[in-house]
Each structure stands twice: as C-alpha cells, then as structure tokens.
Image (cartoon, rainbow, N blue to C red):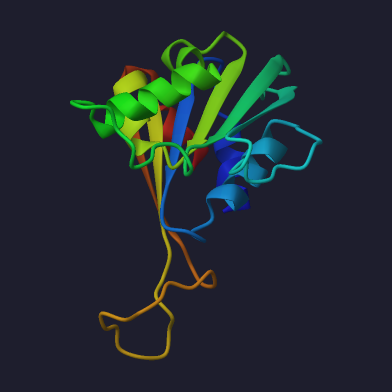
Length: 175
C-alpha cells in the first residue's frame, strides 16, 4: 500500500482530489503514508480520525511546493438530521463548518486533497477526482461464510477509478 501511494504521489498535481475507500484496516492510512513519502513529507502521516483533517507540506515530483490536506471523514455525519435534510447535505454542512468544502470544491494550485471515508461528499463536491478502492482478503484457511471477519494481513486489491478528464492518461503512467 505504501508503494502504491508513493507512486501515485509522483503523478499528482495541485488541485487534485483523491478518495480512499475500503473497510476498516484495508490500508487507507498506510497508503497515505506512502503518498506522503512520495511528496517528500517528513512529518508522520497518521489517521486524522479525531482531528478530521491534517495539513502537511512537501514537494511535487517537479520540485514545486505541495500542500497535502489529509481528511478522514469517518466521524462526519450522524443520526441527528434536520427535517428534510439528507445525509449528503448534512455531510456538506459539516465540511463547510470545518472549512473543508472550499478545499474540495476548488483546491489551490499547490494543494492535493486525500480523503478517507468521503464517498458521499466527494462525489457531490469534486467532479474531477481519483477514486482508490481498497479491498482486503478474508481470513485465509477456510471456506468463507456469513460470519467471516476481514483481516489486516494479506494481499490487497486496489482499483483506481479516474473520474473526469483531469486524470485521463495519468493513472497508467504511475503503475
């Protein structure tokens, strides 16, 4: 996961939005650590679950300044909705209150947004994005059944889905 993150960091540009999705323990934060390394970020990359977003500075592959906004939307949302309010509107309101809506809608020329758990809101805000879907294996050694638990060990399946023209041709260059 780190190697894939590092390689994708080599093709990102300012204004890019990347969405990481997958079950708990799939490797989203591990991917983010490799991505940070690929941007030359010296600070530790940890899950921003309780802070919602962390901002870190590094460099793009061409040496220009890179500003990474690493968002973990896992704790956003909730059960208390206003009458007539849907889940996406609620999440967008929370992003706005955190000042993250503008980062997603119109990232600055040196900013890259890497968001974990943000499928609903990113689709509403970022028409140009790279979706990175990570699947992890079931516990090996027996036939799968309804009670199977996912394990953090094993090989991951990573699917890259470019959305919008900004990603056309870039993904294949990284892999």
